[in-house]
Length: 140
Length: 140
Length: 95
Length: 95
Image (cartoon, helix red, strand yellow):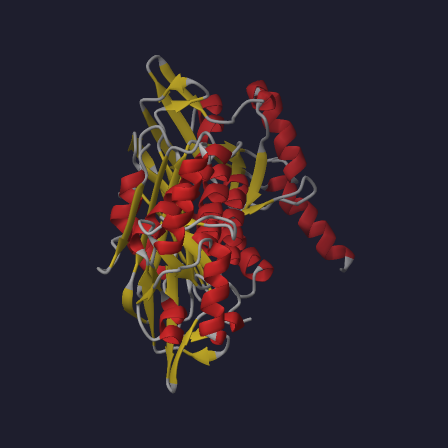
């Protein structure tokens, strides 16, 4: 039940993260994969740069996963891997994988983790366009 | 946008199904993986046997995916692979993967497809226990 | 539709035999994977189900038993033809 | 808590300097990744934010700017100590 949480500057191995959560007791695995889109708000994106405050990000990620275990006691295994550094179009930025005995909870827990991750985990995204860069969500 | 739908007696390549849906235009991929649990309703399960009426199953699966495209017009790519034959504990029975520009729709569309698949797709499951077998859900 | 065609159709229905494919627990109940119903065969899905349940009462104990015609779920009033691909569909359990 | 300890604590706060680490757009605004605030340094999270916004008004234009103390989000009334790991946290955007 120890969650597999990581922040890495290496390409994410999605299959490994999903394999990490599979057990014979869990019939359902839900995985969310966030990839680099070629546009953002209609503006063409060339690549992304993720910056992370690693030690705090892992602390906060641990809190998020603990909350998920509290909300869904049947939650069995969790893996969250977030990439940092420079990412090209199509690269995997984040994978969240959860295993539960039944499928409805796998969807709910996975969605809770990615939604909450986006609110509290100390990772920042800088989008690179044809004509400059911008920190995402920095200004109102 | 042509969905990748398959019923196979070979082990499912989850990574291939997920790769099949990834595009530079879709930032979000959600995948559901159903695996063989070691118990069902508290009763230990030794293995599963799936039987499929393939031609109808693929027709019905096509309807399900078409309905998903109607409900979520931003849905970009869909892959559904279901295994048949004899499966051991931990084996992947089904994978549903969808790609959308934003993440909320990826969860909703993926869940719709697996939920509806379970209602209409002509695949039958026979659970094998220590002391016999049973067709799942056959009787009230 | 001319009366002649209606008469022809009627004769055709009375003469036809039907093949019904059985899956899952319905195959176990009937004891074979294809059953042939000789003429005069049921003319509609509803008549087919009635005939099958009469011959194999265990079919009536299932949670549900649908009929598929050419890969689509069929209503009771759908007519059946020799060329149709007909199947009994017990409760599905994929996923 | 004895009065003597309170007095000691007061002297300690007035004497201390603080190091604040800056991430994302706050580093761009301040122009460095670590800023050292010499004694007398702000005694609480709220005072730190007030001081930083005074020196760098662009921080006030952000959607939000939190302070983290030892990897946890901190309220305005949380006291600060030299040994704390302190960071400015502009709006996060992971995932």
